[in-house]
Length: 264
Ligand SMILES: [Zn+2]
Image (cartoon, rainbow, N blue to C red; front, side, top):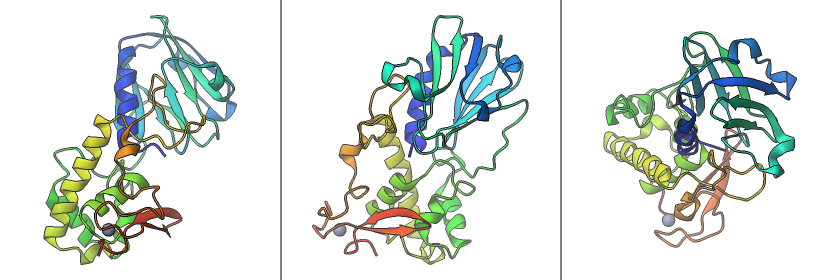
């Protein structure tokens, strides 16, 4: 569930621990295979986002790479309700602790000595993501545009929520073959992708529910962008633009929400 804006919000919250030294790591999920001896004693140099990954770079090389998948969280503080789902804790020399909370065990954490081991496409908020670049990506695929936008090897960080919202904003049917989009459509879509992501970051992301599996930032606060969603999660409600009922379909196994009347 966490997409680029949620992960970006978590990373910004975690930046408060930059410069701290990891005194100890406790691992409660042996499937994580984290080399404690390489992590303990190291200083956190920088925490950054790559696509939907959180990268904790350690001084002197090496990084801890976390992907939250559907329901994982990284938190600077714990709350008692989350204790049983904690899979590792970094104990820091400034007294802080970073918790990896992973209720359904879908999230991943790995230590790598060098580089970044996953293939990711262009970052949608970077200067490399231009309207022309998006047009090239679309022109090169006969896949429906929505699953293409969610392909992490093409564009890094977009998921179900923000690809649905961006397509609604520009009135494009998510089922359209990507290579049928005109230059002017990809130019508008490019702008919509960037604006929906920036607005969602400004709102600290989207939280749908209040269970242990729902998104919270690094300090346990909920996102606020759910109030701004036009179509995502709103099956059967009225399209805010034309009043038609919003429908939900499955694309590549994932839910897509859109307005069948004004998205063509
Ligand atoms: Zn509509």
